[in-house]
Image (tube, rainbow, N blue to C red; front, top):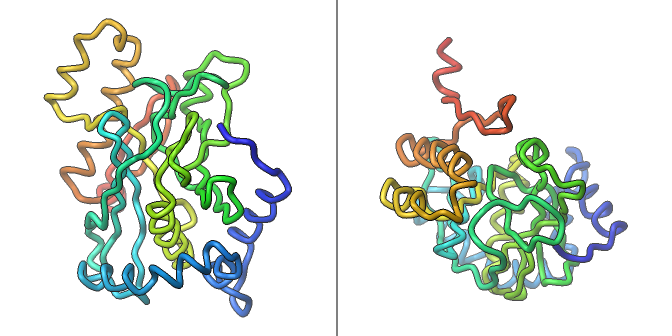
Amino acid sequence: MKPVNLFILILVFSFGSAFSPGKQSFEDVQKTYSRVYQAYKEKEQLINERCEKFGIPPERFGNMYIRVFKEEREMEVWLQRPDKKFVLFNQFRMYGNSGTLGPKREEGDRQIPEGCYHVSNFNPFSNYHLSLGINYPNESDRMLSTAARRGGSIFIHGSDVSIGCIAMSDDYIEDIYIVAVKARNQGQTKIPVHIFPFKPTAENMDRHRGRDEYKVYHDLWTNLAQGYQFFEKNNRLPEISVNSKGYYEFADPELAEMK
């Protein structure tokens, strides 16, 4: 968790959620901030070229999806092409890591959350270069935690170091931040961020299931693996809800449309 200037976050969030046609776009507003402007100056052309390589015209920037694997210290950034299929746009190494495997359940536990989140704010004034806030604690966290104080202020940020956040290098966070800005500018108001303890393949699930210290997390990890497997199989994101026990339910949006 990081110290955050509340006034700045309110200001940034208001820019991120309240602009209308005829005014500056979200992307234009973000470019007025010096760190974002400099990152765009150095990297926008390369990012646009990479988009074109994957069949994504820069003017039709697709939806963004972020996957994080704590044990492997990897972040994946996926983009949706015009044909609705997702492509793996880039992979990044996590530079800072804290805590152990297992979800975040209380303030000060140094844990990186595990679950299905979305980008909740953009902070171009971050103490850690640039940062993207995620909506921890979400509904599942609030139901599964018994702590009086669950903590908050969880970010994907630069500066290499973390206490409960997802820390990247300054170079990497610039790439991630620009892609997120472009996705938001195209109308994606909630960029999914799914955080897994590890890549929940059958082999990895079996490997961790037998360890006594992880038994308390088995139900959650099995639940999260369902969402992972849905994306792996269908190359699209499920609709996600939280049931009465606090676990995620993953529904196929295409099947729902057919009903």
